Length: 370
Image 1 (tube, rainbow, N blue to C red):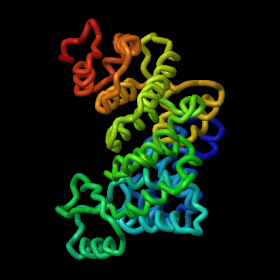
Image 2 (tube, helix red, strand yellow; image 1 turned 90 degrees about the horizontal axis):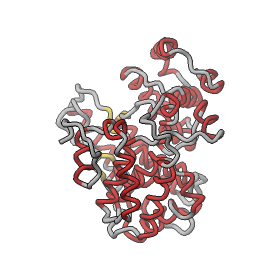
Image 3 (cartoon, rainbow, N blue to C red; image 1 turned 120 degrees about the vertical axis):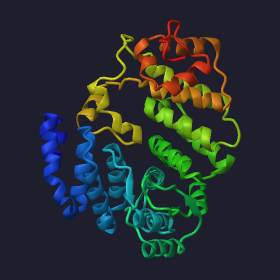
Image 4 (cartoon, rainbow, N blue to C red; image 1 turned 180 degrees about the vertical axis):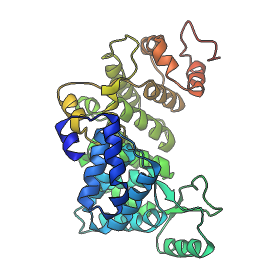
């Protein structure tokens, strides 16, 4: 799989399925490097394994946690999410993740800010994987483990789990203080800052107005920075800002975000195609990581992924929630975007309703939208 992904050749889906199925029983014995390679390969081939395979992979991450290099582990977690992994074993989120974050923030730590940002994002993305048969003794053991760590952030309970409140235990204030340190935000890659903001928003953290101003300014600080952000990242950035800011962002920031989205929309052929198979190969960029495999070659060759209507809708609705005002000309450009039937029809019904309430609505609308 790794060789196929590196060669930019994607086998027939049936062959991909057979290869992945053949590894299911052995995932538990994979080394950290093998786990990294398989996650990278599946993300590059945009293949989502079965739930049982993903469960085995999650437990393999738990068993190999301390054997990973921090940057290697952080990237593997992000790539695994692109493959469809949504849960990790409860001890991983309750014990291993907080401990790794603390080590990364230690005075003598060499962990890069981008690695720490990916770990915060992972803590917000993943939910605890708990068997339905979890008994009271196990629950007591987990709760005892969590007491060793600082502030508690509720992560929620997965579907089908027993009536046990699962806490994602993270050193919240230490994290916020670390990111508030002089120069840390400014040297972090914009894509990693988007991940950080998304993780903070998912976890319910409260960075405060001073740190948020620095984070938003660093993400959208210059035309060169704007050019690095793709539509999925812009959508996540807008949503995260809506959840985290305590004061409205500056007019310059709103204009910069809108301009970045307009740049991508203006590259569209406007022939009704929303996303083709080539564009789907860049879906891993939704998680803020560098394109890989064939997607990397396309990206380096100047290919721009198609703008997914959900991303446009999320940016516009988030800006509305932030109180951002668009000029008549800008509104007209986005209104024209929604006149393409394929763009509008690609939205779920509830999102079409939101767009309609915001004044974005095709002139000839399908009766099912109203």
